[in-house]
Image (cartoon, rainbow, N blue to C red; front, side, top):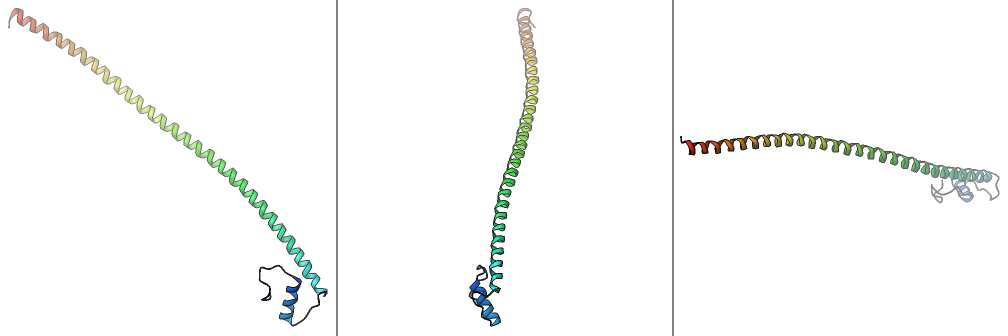
Length: 137
């Protein structure tokens, strides 16, 4: 395009006239039939631009829906995994607690047995002490 019309500027009749004048050294009248092609191209480009914008909006909407759906599924999966991990952790803790409870029950049983043995030994020592006192050594 010409230096007067930036590369990203819309195609205008005057821009085309300036470009043809500069590049081909040919002056076109404002009603030159060749400029109808410029109008048709501009209309086609405008329609194409609208189509692209609509497509872009639809893609953005679709992408948002997919991302939202994906996020929901990831959240569900994460919650499920977290739930399973917490459940497994609780089950492991309960297993350890049950093992300790079994060990504690064994310990208490042993303590009861030792307490009974201790009581029997105490009674025997009293009996021996009394027999020594009464009958001598």
